[in-house]
Image 1 (cartoon, one colour):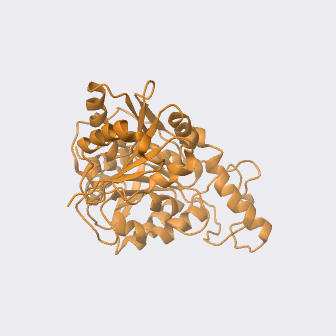
Image 2 (tube, rainbow, N blue to C red):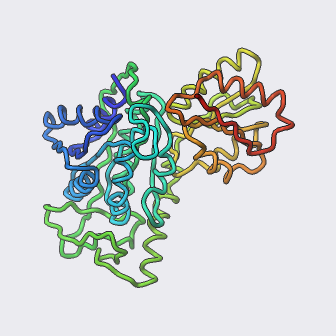
Image 3 (cartoon, rainbow, N blue to C red):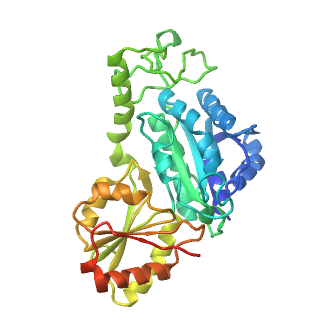
Length: 384
């Protein structure tokens, strides 16, 4: 099964019953499978007129009580940003899949990239938290798709599930579990006339009533008070934004997931994520066979960023390589976190995956000439 097909099947297993989208390479297979499978479970699939409307429909379906998802790629992800910001402010749970391709603009529609990782964090305007997950294989894709829906419901927030053309279109054997653990929406236990949709007196994440179940309340993208109606009160605005940030940051122990492989005795650590981690794993095997002690740090949750875990891992090695299919995005975040370990970036933005040979040769180059390289040196690997 392909990665995009896995996402669709996992979403349905997680309880997704609404999908709105617009075809775009290389994510379209997600919509194809959802169109076939959702009616079988009394779900609803709708192809909207564009990506803006798709995101709006997903928000509306979630407010009405459905677990809802959309899927897109770079240009469509850009179009979703305004409504994605609305979902952050209104605290509407949903899942947004972005199968990345080369950019900017229409870029390289059928080739892979990791150029949207910063857009996943900062695509919409204003201060807001976000959760973004990025699996590296198809079994993990199934698990993290289910987890994306659970996190969305638990924290009343949009969750971004990142993929790329390589993972979306490659095929692997995947064994679906007999059942998955799904999280139901935390609803209010008070009468409708007493319900305040953004009352956080008891928790950072307020209970969420579904429309059409007797509860009526105001939803807006404006700064609002506990009633949901707009407010320009400075204290209310500050408190609301701080709470939005805190509901995610205070729960990082539950949200963050990462993998450390071979770092116990490593001299070289390699930071990689998504499809790039697959090249790194192959390079690691070759380097270990050649006597080079190398390990990998791979974030599964890329937002929030695993600051403390990466800082601890980097402190145990002589150098940290950063492998990305872009011109250097996460390397800037790593420079913020890792202060005392040299950082070498290996980047490619040609639409082609980073070859394990490039990683192997860079490792040997550093071992031979590392003392002459300055910290935070970037090695741009380009192809003609």
